[in-house]
Image (cartoon, rainbow over all chains, first blue to last red):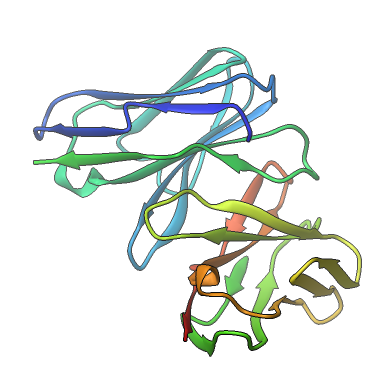
Length: 112
Length: 110
């Protein structure tokens, strides 16, 4: 199994609070990704990173920010959580462009 | 535009063969991936095709035709545990990210 750990695995919080999700890898892979997955929408890319301090937006980046200060950690922050951000969040890692992405177990986030 | 299409749902019988199709339009094409996702779990990698033709891995095979923008996943000797969603994904533009289909939910019946 690819060494990817997401934390927390489950979180319930209130609208307006900041939330940070962590993705930690032990594979030393260059690329890291944050997705959200919702019924009827499939996997949608939020942000991704192609190296330390190198990040770029995905298709649904509004309301989210990321940071990657070291190779092994990629943090996703919801600045002020809204109910529309209730979702399952997956982190994925990849070594090079022709290699598959490998996913963490996901974080189930509920915003009340 | 960039798009990946696959059927929403399919059903099949245990022991049978099923083919899940995927058509794509992406810029900077650099291969097509197939993933399996069981309910409540993360997607897991099944196969990657970059050249035309059939790649076989046990009961699962994947086919690619670049000229037709078409791929399929073939599942043989279906088992109940194959009930899952199957996701097709292709590279977008700079190859740093993937475009994902919405997934095909396969139900295997006894």
